[in-house]
Image (cartoon, rainbow, N blue to C red):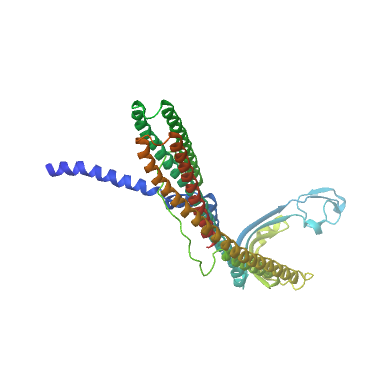
Length: 432
């Protein structure tokens, strides 16, 4: 009985800890990237387009290779007024009047009664189906590549926003440190004022600076909430709660042997060739076998005898249309040259772009190293100043001036780190 109660008590705690761990693990860059991809309308649209292309291939197979079966029915009522044999009579369906008022019998046949089952079977159409399906298959590959490109774009945009949130978080942390430092120093200074070591004006000045940092802290927290909500909007996450984002540090990715951006140009070129093949299909011979059976009559009294069937072969071959085939071939070649030019231009620009970003990243590394050393010096100086404040050897104005300079340096250093991370993110985006 004791063991059972122990399990009942312990299990909820284990579940609670596990759930808490999962929630914390969600709030990293990977979580937001995954959510952005899952909730992207553009990615979803391209995936659905890819599915529809697969269905289109099946439709093309049916269109080019399967028999088409249908029913046609037609009834034409063409009465006339006959004057044969010097008698004027109304004939709803003339058997062959010669002197009459109404449509010419050669035009109307006195009426039409049709009800036929029609069958049409394309012959030797495998090449047409293959060509048409290849074009749709290329369109599917383009949709799949668009998904990859969109995911890559989202990763960059989400990472940029995530870095901005981390910057707000760091600035909030620095401001909290300053607020706590000044609050502690304020408590010490109150005792020193009571001991007549410092004046009341010194305490008032310290209190003013403490409130200034409290105001900055409020601003940084508001900025963090704003940027975090923007991150949720960007990722399609319906959440208004504040979460502590996990810290992360991006690093430069190695240059890949083949840029994924090149796939777009390759597929565009293949698509042009596939489209040209579709155009040239109409210059290939087309043979269709057709047949029908049913009623086909022009005179109502003979309808029971007019049931039959017919069959035939249709052959079509376009061998001249003013040179349109050659013109479309030239057009396709020109468009391929345009794609090749865009590709070469991208390669050239991207090489320069990455080199430029690498130089900027190196520059930021140097500036961050200098700022880190300055912050260590400020920290050491403040420790010395604390001792001098206890002995009344340092003016509060000098202490506050150093403190404000340190706070400004902390803020600038946080911005430097964020800007360097943004540059690394840009480099990794283009080095894909």
